Length: 380
Image 1 (cartoon, rainbow, N blue to C red):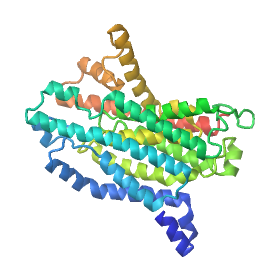
Image 2: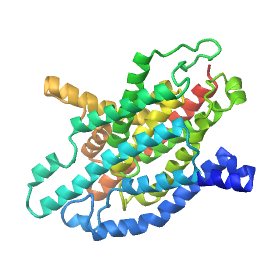
Image 3: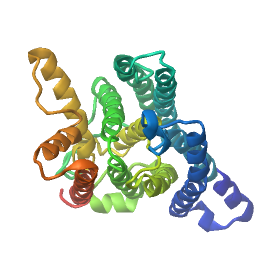
Image 4: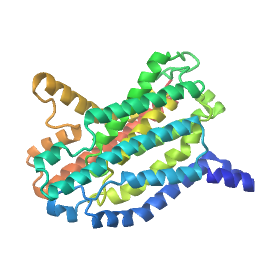
């Protein structure tokens, strides 16, 4: 908004460019995060806000970075964005989901202090660590997503008029989504992605690289799709105005890169629900807006696998009282299997296990990003 205002005052065409605004959003958010994370971490340590319990809290990673994420992304948005229906809808999802996650993060701190004062047992703390129950949290995700889906369907022209099918040119087949199918699909996509990113945020940096890969994919697709010449040449949907979300994507990527700097092992700060839930919801709605929802299982493969592992584990256990995985989300299943192999011993071994799982998930995310680009842009 500020950059666009400067363009109107100065007449400098560069300031009107979405690529320039996106680059500036990424740089500004990165610099803001790099500048603000150290004092924020010191403040949390002073307030004894930690992800660890007991004596380890002095040196353990503090939480949550997501509250600072929210501030940085919103400030950067005010600088770089031009508001339209796509931007407004994406910001609404990001803001509300971040707030829901922040309630959980704050409640965890409150319960930690109750545990330290002896007001609750450790078992009760583990059981009531979340401020909002999983059922209520999921209900809130679905309700907010449903409202945004209905408003988007009503006020964004052509948002669901056609479906972008994999492997098929839009010139040959471009079917229409009926409203009774589109709105539930959009609602579930946002809610599932919010949970998927939240479940993945278990090890240091584990959710960060897959999230950046998803955002890079969505940014490129949105930029290309908004150009009538390029979209016609590539035989993909033309979506006017979608490029306005690019500075928002750049702001989140810049913040995530700065977070990656401080979250690299050994971590000094963790994302928390306020970060992972908000980013997950944002990724979900952008997949819908860019008409790439059928590519989500490819590009967001890690997040969907993490979500599916929890969903299957809970459902199977309720039916049979048995478990499919050693532990869910699935990265803990791999952690337990590697731990039982006997190759990794002590704290160093545990660090090696987490590092191997994290790096392999990162590599898989990058490979799936490449596959997603190839399928979306060329294989039709």
